[in-house]
Amino acid sequence: MVNQENLLLYEKIWIKRTLQRAIDLLILLLLFSLLCYRIFFIISNKTFTIPWFLAFSCESWFTYTWIILLNTKWSPAVTKTYPNRLLQRLPENELPCVDLFVTTADPVLEPPIITLNTVLSLLALDYPANKLACYVSDDGCSVFTFYGLLEASKFAKFWVPFCKKYNIQVRAPFRYFSQVTNSDDDSAEFKQEWLKMKDMYDNLSHKIEDVTRNSTSFQFEGEYAVFLNTEKRNHPSIVKVILENYDSLSDGLPHLIYISREKRPKYEHNYKAGAMNVLTRVSGLMTNAPFMLNVDCDMVVNNPKIIQHAMCILMDSKNGKDVAFVQCFQQFYDGIKDDPFGNQWVASFEYIIKGMGGLQGPFYGGTNTFHRRNAIYGLYPDEIQYGRKGKITEKMLIQQFGSSKEFVKSVTHAFEGSGNSIDGISPSNLLDKAIQVSDCGYEYGTSWGKQMCWLYGSISEDVPTGLNMQRKGWRSECCTPEPTAFMGCAPGGLLTTMIQQKRWSSGLTVVFFSKHSPVMCTLFGKIQFRAGLSYCWLTNWGLRSVFEVSYAALVAYCIITNTSIFPKVRFSH
Ligand SMILES: O=c1ccn([C@@H]2O[C@H](COP(=O)(O)OP(=O)(O)O[C@H]3O[C@H](CO)[C@@H](O)[C@H](O)[C@H]3O)[C@@H](O)[C@H]2O)c(=O)[nH]1
Ligand SMILES: [Mn+2]
Image 1 (cartoon, helix red, strand yellow):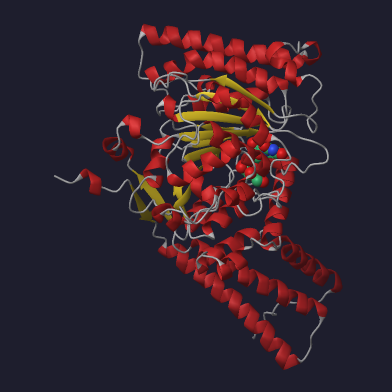
Image 2 (image 1 turned 90 degrees about the vertical axis):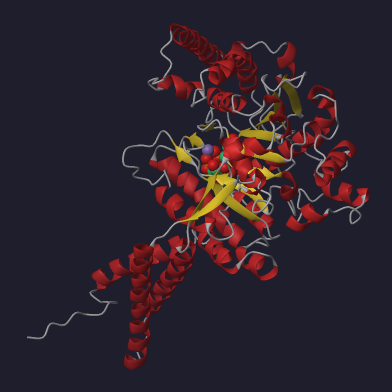
């Protein structure tokens, strides 16, 4: 019999693309021959005009881009995970805890009903409920988001058991009820419960719709009083425990905590990175799980077993030890026909992410990612194995992680791998400490956002955050289970697409020229050479436009002035 302990929890599958490689090399050859032609022409004709210089620079850039792209695409890999082996090896009560993070920022662009569907799909994950805690960060400080979550938590008491009982795959109610149910269960009992659930969900969404529509008549009483007179950019920290699994029941509901970090006009809030750091601290205090999953508010779970899949990678004793994060692809359910704006990122996933998966691992994409808490806290992979004890004093920890004694204690526990920071104390008893670490002055003078955790300085915070971990020698892995792990919504129109792409490209350009640029990380860190090149491709994405526009303009210029920058074809008779 095969020893269970020796079986791998996951395997890396290398994808063969021989034809693709041959075509790509041929294109590279053509690019080189064009450059040779330019050089030869300039030398032999001794003419050097501006259009020629421009053409030569653009073509050199295209060749460079093609080389780094070729390098990225050269050896793609995906992973295959074996959740059954994980469950055979670890009894349910020994599975690791996972903290779930959801970020939302604007109740108008990201309506509460979307956020709470994401939350419901997380609460219903196929994983022991006492191992999970869901934290929602609301940068919009919206009473309606909070109201929606409160109402959703009541609905969850029925929804989660329903999903688990009938093994429903799609556990975000709006997605589930918009599909034709092709459940195997034809029983009258199922049909009856289905109708009841649908009715309850319709009620829930109407309630939220009504409240948002008649916003002026909202009563700021009781639980809601703290939201009175708050402004989006000017309000104190609000932390509320919405659900609490007091008795630590594995078939109950996970903890659900609402956080709106303090915002003041004079303080930088650092967008999503700032929100993620607050989530990290509050969760560190309250549950301190060794792993964390982060999703955007519009990314719902599509595969309820996704945590098991990700844990196969992170818990694998052979290959998983140096994996800092596991990235699941972003896939979308609301694409427009033929995807004219490329919002589905099909080619990028197929070639770039899988390609990077074969190097040091995919880049951190900001959502659908499982993180190792210790890697986020800035440890090196070998420090996890051999321990960090003795090297670091409490004073140093306070300098790095801030002045909350309880939080620093939780960090020590995380480093020692001893889990829950303040054992036996339930989240609601830690509210004042959680509020303290959510205040905007907390990070002043510390390392948050500078050396560790989610890095500040670029609006595409995800890429440098991932790079900063890989720089220390960590790897990452793709996780590609069947069915797809998460599904989200993509921007629909041209304008929203352009705004999104402008944000990404400018954010990535900033990363290329920053302290955490892939060049620096390769030269002075542990980013492998080819992985560094693939990061160059990613962070040069915005710069490409300069050369592409110039080249296109050059052709127009040649037509107008009746000149040519290309070799002329001569026909001999
Ligand atoms: O001040 C902010 C701004 C944004 N967010 C949240 O961050 C997420 C992503 O922001 P969004 O404006 O929706 O950006 P997208 O372009 O849709 O997101 C992609 O690009 C971001 C980087 O630019 C990544 O962080 C995301 O994970 C990735 O999905 C959303 O959940 C927001 O609610 C905040 O919490 N606070
Ligand atoms: Mn978004």
